[in-house]
Length: 344
Image (tube, rainbow, N blue to C red; front, side, top):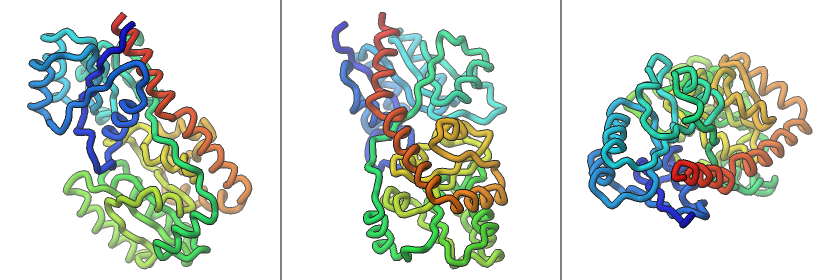
């Protein structure tokens, strides 16, 4: 079969690289070997819709977005008019009460986790039109002690300070509050908590003020650094001892947050929430699943800290899994097989 063109329909794939869905598009598109990627450029919404309806069409349309009424309706209409083979990668799931089956439109829908696959199946999506292909992250080198020491000096963090980092959302999932409460329950006056969150909505500022007030009341305000959206996230992950992403839900987040996979690439111990899709990372031995509760988080960190050898081994396993199971080359190859399948 000759090389086909695949149109990636997504948010504009341009810097800054702080959005899971556009990072996923970038990494898949640049890893294709038998297909030619076409990106939708900087256009949004109406411009993309016009491109689907009127531009010369590539051989396959590949959509990347969280199912929603407006976008799904437009994609369904364009597909009916143009009759181009289509794939929809569900980058994150809507709220549980949403009738997700009514928001799907493509020939094949791709889930990023087993949890998402099962929810789609239970929503009535035929398994013949479902696939499970995980997200991916570019490989990162496993840092040695010298590199971590250099970064601690750069960011003015004492070498022996125990550091947690919460790199998730402030507004959704409850993970930020669990991180702050868990850090307070851990009760280590020589430790530091980094909060590195990209504000997604206006609620982020309100939530930050609320959590800052909690930190003051619990006497840990001086131990919490509020970093906001940062271009130095890989450095901050590298110098941290624990990456805490213990959320109650994955709403508004990729099933396996890419920052969790990046942390695993960097051989960092990652703690995720039980009952979320991220718990599947723990089944691979690449993360630790924790009940989404502050005391449970603090207890988990205490247990991990007590066994340095096991903690180092967890980091090695995380790196191994992240650079194999979640490698762009492997994930892109799975999509290329799917492109060929729906064009056959």
